[in-house]
Length: 405
Ligand code: PMP
Image (cartoon, rainbow, N blue to C red; front, side):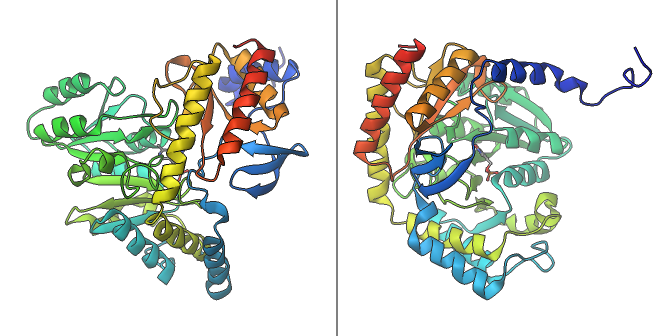
């Protein structure tokens, strides 16, 4: 071995993943994590590899990306305010549009305070690490999103995970926390890998019994679940017991950005103490303008919500009838996860669907729970009933070709 090759390489920790990836690509399969959309035709269709493709793997639940009012608001803001703010919200980066989108969020959720971050990832990172500090305890579902875990890591609180959606396990952890310590319980409305929802009403009641504050990430439910699209907590009638709702503009809202809404009387101090809010550039004016317009339209999205539920039920029922194993026994959200026997057949099925003209997400560990490989389908309110039938036909042919059904 030469001296050069024995030098420590900081990349050597990635070798197992590099090898696994090379083996998968050597099998001739298209790279499932490097798909390029050459042209996007609508919320549900794009050109991929020169082929017209139905999109069933985006988080564009309400189809707002191509809404004409949303697009016009973005163009107007570009013309009137320029391409970017070049600064932090606390210095030169708060424009009228940032205030306007926070007003829209306060109205949407009927809450007193709204704070917008540059992404949902940063909203979790910022709020969690800032409110739960040294000597405090965070009790969280083990299947929490990476941004929640990273928010925990960035802060100094004690981290106490519990088994996914297990109310008793959560209570057991809360009971053991020393008296007088600050407690934050973190839950999600919809868990994005399997598309299952949390029993928030019961869990929040337990959290309150132990005087814990509650943060719920409603990234995948905003705009869709609940009578006003406020999320699973609204649907289950417990939104007023949630201290902090975290959300994103990158899903139903159809653009990019993150936020926290709250009724906590001291919430505004967050704008000075929350580092992932202070030490980064604010969203461009065009982005906050599209977000505000989209959020205001989502307040009147009842018909779209109803159609999206129909799509979810039809796809779930159809895939079950074809013999696929799904992540939930009933459709609980706009995400339908199809369980694959292993990564190889999952990748083969993903590719067969792409050749049929259908894009879904291939999800694999460590993003997935329990080492599962999933084909994650996420529906859009703009998918027509005919498109859903076409999708079922594609699944049937691909499933038979790959030998999964
Ligand atoms: N929370 C959850 C539950 C998510 O699934 C995601 C993104 N997939 C985020 C937060 C982060 O949102 P963003 O894309 O705005 O960073």
